[in-house]
Image 1 (tube, one colour):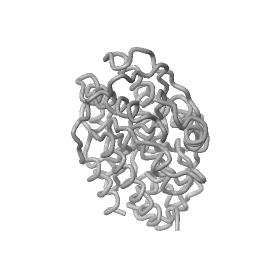
Image 2: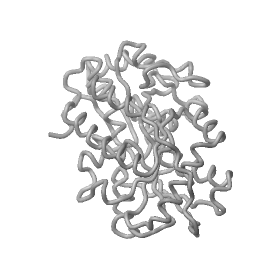
Image 3: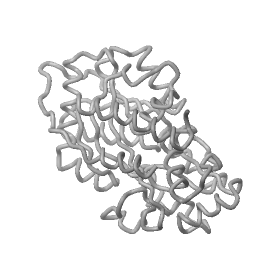
Image 4: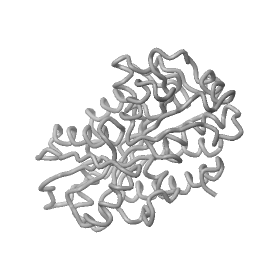
Length: 328
């Protein structure tokens, strides 16, 4: 497990030269981004923030429409693109390690990563484990001890399906802490991080597993408290007070890349234009500020380099999932 998570971290250090050449003659008429979850989660953040920033920087001359299409942990959106919108040049879809996880585990029945075109990454988002602000639990070891001593006493909520990336993050932490049967961890899946946090605040669950970008707003509002960031060392700036799992003796690292895919039959001109727009956005000083403000770590991959990275991620997650018994 430690080797697998270190491999995942090493992948985040990969860089690719920025592809800034725009395809001549293509401008999306009605730019649209599908967020495959309800409002409030990481995919929703990806679509809305990137859409706004592309327009602010003049990379889009029209407002990007954001459509929330929840269901099946992203499977409903994936099927919509593959089956109904396979040649839509105006459409991009938010994706992440959660997308790669579900593809790796066969959670989108009949679908594979090769049925879409992978555009570019916009950064990586470290995982967090959090509790309600008024919880008696103050450290990650305390939470994991509760699970270890009485698995039925603690439910952990996340915005991905069972076996998805949010689920895997808490299992990686449990495994690193010495919980031999990680299947004893009680995980409850919701369609998006926002819904999972709502259940935490309602007292229906005792902890939340997600990414720092989707947790940030709830931390700022005083609703939740992060007890562990799954990063190799503390993040900077306003995240500096959040402890890592590693400093608490739990050698668990979980980084969620964020990016986009597009329909498989999108024209080459449209594909190159979208890759160029996202590349130019990533290279901007404005995006660097947004990354810092939202806890995103660098991950600069476009076009073929991103396609290869996702392919490697799918293979890697299959290995991790087999190691912790999610798939055979």
